[in-house]
Length: 243
Image (cartoon, rainbow, N blue to C red):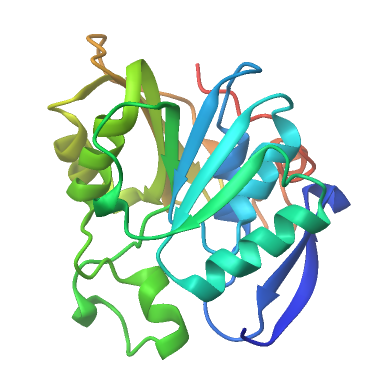
């Protein structure tokens, strides 16, 4: 197990152990979890949960929903299990260690969500630390495969929700166009006068509605020093409504 320290999410509602070195989850995971909507009894699946930040936030907020997560790195899967147990969520959420390419072929999930590695090309990064490479680089599991596996396991017209770089939006739309539709796109801007750096995309399996570009979530005020009221609410556990 790697050396870890402890921080909190959702205004102290979630206690989380994270590795001291390497990729550390934060705002992206909180926003992804906040964008989910599910009814009690649904089975929601996360791909690539890491130490479990988005999983923990989603399970804390969505009571009565069952969660299953897959994580390819054993140390991260173990840490996610520890985090679930210490937050009292292990009765509704479980973590499997394995490659999503090996998932069963039959549909079993109401929804799938993920925060995939942001880059396919190692040259796109300036020599990432070894501890960060798996989180940042897709390797043998590119985005289209993540989407394909989600389409394979989602039952009926369930939803897929992704957070990614804003400039990856064309790749997301291309990857989802075959199996998904009725796409909602939520840009996330660091400030009112800055372009979006992230997008949250929700798509419905078999959906036929047109794509909809929603008003952006603005993270900071004009000075960049304070979070906006909406961002503060999301970080405290409020939902990020996609409609």
